[in-house]
Length: 355
Image 1: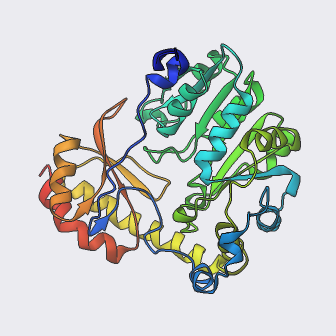
Image 2 (image 1 turned 180 degrees about the horizontal axis):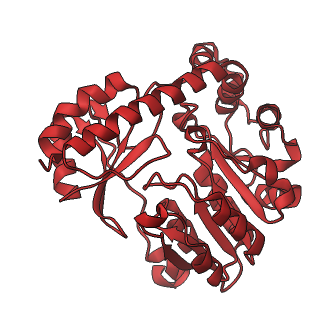
């Protein structure tokens, strides 16, 4: 007689639900922090030219061509790079590689929703630590994170969903004093600068995670990577396994790195300009948006679920965060070129205004 389901599935997995978000089509989708300009020009030209070999044969085991392109782009060694199917995959592989039996993962709260998910999947105790308050710029609490003595400490800077940065001083201290591995998620770093990638190799147990889903406009290609000391990277690569980056994804990402730097930089400037215009608009509605260093803005609101529904009915999608720790109900609004944002302004004024 076969064992019942409850006895063969790990308890932590059995108690979990699938990640989900509202992906129904919407006229103006400002819900997922992707690049509102679309994909880089050179990447678009490659898809019609894709030959059958890109689909019929296995890709490179560990994306060697992509590693070389990232190496040239960032000035780090190829042995300091590990790639994956989006930064989610790299994070999950890293957590799997460095999780210790009976260990914990410490992280700011709120932060990227996949971190507690991956921690739970890997049987780690979850140790959320509240962000410091507005008087401290919503910085991470280095003292409290270090006090967890976790085998993995995660920091996202700029942080998702708040858009706030961890101070360099806090990151430096966490990297210097953490007992385990530090995962520094820089998914949105192109919008503010100050990356730690060139210091990761010599920092010991620091792994810096990056993505091509945001500034590079390749969210659908699902390509992420991490930079760290070769010994750390090798452990993540073993945990990750081969064939995680498809041939087509590798080809378009390499092309974007080699040919589309001006397009990427232009997109970053457009976002920064639009964000600078969008924040005063929100404030004129009587709202108090959280200062952001990313390509999105977190806005505390009265009723996140109801107001998100009302916006979607008007053709505008945003991401709701009901009862967000430290912020209450809030919505996260992605920022794209001003011509896109401008089309959504009447709906925001109608649904979100507190005036």
